[in-house]
Amino acid sequence: MKTLNLSVLDRIMLPQLLPQQSSKLEMITISSIVEKTTFSDQELSDLGLKDNNGKVTWTSECDVEYKFTAEQIEVLKNASRKADENKSVNRQNIQLIEKIDAI
Image (cartoon, rainbow, N blue to C red; front, side, top):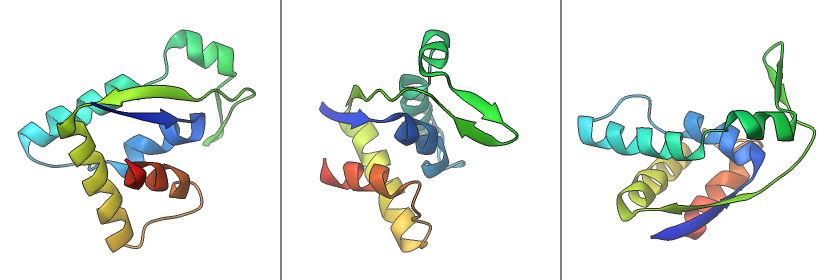
């Protein structure tokens, strides 16, 4: 297992970076990543996370360390590589992509 520290923005961007369609096995792995990094009700409250007309805002920052399996790491790295190949890297997801590439 490898660890990855994710910020609030990283956790918001992660589901958008991951494939929306794939094989059954890979979708199970993708679902496990999303479940692992989803905000709990308590975190939503503590961070002041809100959706303001499609723009997500928060009032507090908190990085969380997550442990990922080899299969999850492979999915994350493939998603990062595909984002780069498709030229879909942007200011919002570059930090996350760099963290993924570094593990």
